[in-house]
Every structure is written in structure tokens, then in C-alpha cells.
Length: 429
RNA sequence: GGAGGAGUGGCCGAGUGGCUUAAGGCGGCGGUCUUGAAAACCGUUGUACGCAAGUACCGUGGGUUCAAAUCCUACCUCCUCCGCCA
Image (spheres, rainbow, N blue to C red):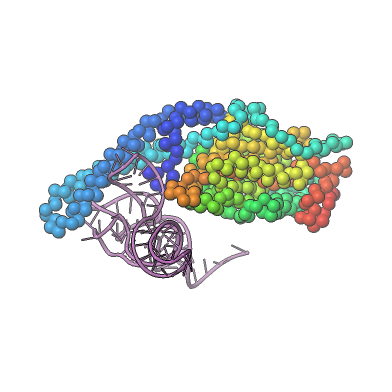
């Protein structure tokens, strides 16, 4: 039953138990499926037992209803009273078994895509292409936090006074540049790439977080509001994907493509000591997200085109990057396949992630009950969902600072952003 | 925050304890008629689990009853009025 929710893929797991376990084993972290078979069998046994009793109850109750003289059916009434108690008991057992089963299933990550390279960690990711020339500077490249503070467009000290570590205060041309990037990205994706702009809530409920896979497993990564049971979104993926939760779409409206600018909030629990300086890892950052709902047979191609839409942003900004195919050990919980785009940062002499584009196949669609009906078909099918950053705005901002820095400490404005900067072509002291 | 009202199928809407496996209408689909179309008429039209019989679902969760869309209860959402507020 699992009221309201779509049955998790119990049938698939039942029929492909060994294969699923094997595929999941290539992921990082262990998945314990040992209790599945027993719970599944218990559930089915209870279900058939309780349904038989309910069928009997329905028939006898109808008979009692039709009988005018209730004294003739006192025996039936007494018996049904007992049957009702039995049903109540069995329903309680069933609910408990289903809760355990649901908890187990909700904790199982997505099965990796067949095309994802098998590997244990980041080390085994596969670079599939790179674009652009790394700038050859005839001076020592500065890190963006030094550049930003010297130019007076970033103030980390005051941000920490306001909120604490891992927050940033943008000032003047810096604030303007962040806003310019948001507008530039949204305009590009809506006007050139065919996405519909959305501006969703930044706080969502448990059902939404569960639909996309953040809950129940990753609650500790999320900011939560105390008085009402809501969470600050860690990515626009959550509200935007959940737009169509519990809906049946029609085949002709697919693919549905949305873009959204939102701030994102992450606790970054467990990353103490990493990227403590600068904009790389913040509790709050801006991101423009791309989200697609597609037919299953289109999802591989649609991921590729979404990836290109994200790459286009970097190409227009003339920022060098590479694309990495994540291996099975490095893919996130909900994703089946993920391409990361990593931008070149001269200040760190390293590529750093600036976008993550994933095909979730039917994983989120199942949890969030997002389906579509093919033309002429009777039964609805699960859609595939795809999303990716297009791009992380804060990281784009810092990539511009580091790649466009000049010997005198000033920073040039990329050509395509000038109209968004009121014609400004350089940030200087 | 205070006082009222309401949540029923894709949509509108009837239903205040048992011939409701939810009336009727609209929309959708199929058909009859037509040179074709419209109109009219006839039929059909939710989701999940299950091989099936069947079971569940009338905002959500509990409860009362042999029997709940219908009664009780808590919560959620929306509407109206008052207060406060960007």
C-alpha cells in the first residue's frame, strides 16, 4: 500500500536481488539488504490475510445492512466485531512491517548507470574532455580571497561577525558581479536553451526533501527550522523537482525544462578544515540550477544536452574547464550517472568543481511519484529526472577573479558580462 | 494572532451512517449518423498492490461502529472578516 507514495521498487528488488546487490556494491558505503527478503515476505503474507478478512467483513456487513430485523443477525454482528479486532491487529502489524521496509528501501542509493566507470573514489573518475587555455600569467597568481579583499568587493571578516565562519559579504562591484552572473545565466538558459524560469520557495517540507533523496539519510547536512518543520534548500533541485511530485504528466509536454536561481544552504558537516578560506565552501551560496523531466529513453541524451548547456556558460565567460565522468564510488546517493564540470583556478593551480550534472533515471521519480502517460497508453510510467548546476554562481565569481586578474591586482570583466555591469570593464581599487 | 466557512474523481458538483462497486454535468476517448464536420444519440473514461478473486484510496493521521465520504478528534491547506506587517 504505502498510501499516497508510489510503491518503491520492491518488485524490481525482489526479482533482481542479486544483481542489484552487486551493482550497489560498486558504490561507496555499504548497503545492507539482508532483511529485505524476510520483510517482503511478511508483508505479502499479512496483506493477503488481512484482505481476505476485509472481504468477508464487507460482505457480511452488507447483509446486516439489508436485514431490517437486527435480532436475526446478532450472531453476525458479534462475529464481525471480532473480525474487526483481528483486522485492526493485522493492520498494525502490517504498518510496522511496511515502516521497516520503507526505511530500508529509502536508505538504498540509486543503482549506478551501466556506463558509469567502476571505481572506488575520486581517483578513478575519468576526464572526458577539456576546454580553453589556462591563462599564462607573468606574475604569481593570487587567490581570490586576497584579490577580493584588496579590491574591497569581498569582506570575510565582517561576514563572520554577522553570521560566523563560511559566510561571505559581497560589496560594491562584487555584489554587482554576483548579480550580473545570475542574470546572465538565467537569460542564457531561458532565451537560448529553452528552459522555463522559476523562482521557488527556499524552505521546503519533509516530503519534498524525501522525494529528491536528501531525507531520510542526510538530515545532518541540512539546516532545519525549529518552530515549523521545514528545511532550507541545499539546492534548487529540491523545490524544482518536487514541482511535479504526485503528478501524472502527459507525454507531449515532455521534456519539461526548468531553470531557477536560488541561494543554497548547507551545513558542510564533516568538512571541517577543508576550504576554510574564500568562497569555495560556504554555508550559503548562490546557484542557477537546470532541471529536466524526460521520457526514460531520452534521459542519456538529455543529460548530455544539459551538460552542454552548463558548459556553454563557461565557454561564453572564457573560463577553462574540464569535464569528468564520475566513477561508481564517487556518485551521489540519488544519481545513476554524474558528470562534473571543473573550472581551472590559477590561484590554487587546480581544477575545482563548478557544476555537477546528473541523471537520476527513475530514482527521484519513484520517491516523488512523478509519472507520465504515453499517448494512448493506459498505465502511467515513471519519468526520468535530470539536473545540473548551470552554474554555481559563487564559484563562477571566484573563477573570474582568479582567471581575469591582472598584475596590478585589478580584475577584467568578461566581455559577455559588461552589459550586465553597466558597461564596467574592470574592477580596480 | 482572533472569529467564521470550506476541502469529493482531469474539472464542476450531489451526497450527513448501510441498494454509493461516489449521482449528475463538463472535458477526454471510441462508435452510430454524415460526402466531411457540427449537433444528436450510444458506449467508455482514476490510482496502487495482487496471477486472480479481491483490497485500499472522498485533504492527512487517529478514533467510534457489525458498517464511515457521512459521526468524533488532532493536524494541514484554502476562502471571508478583524488585528498586525514588507
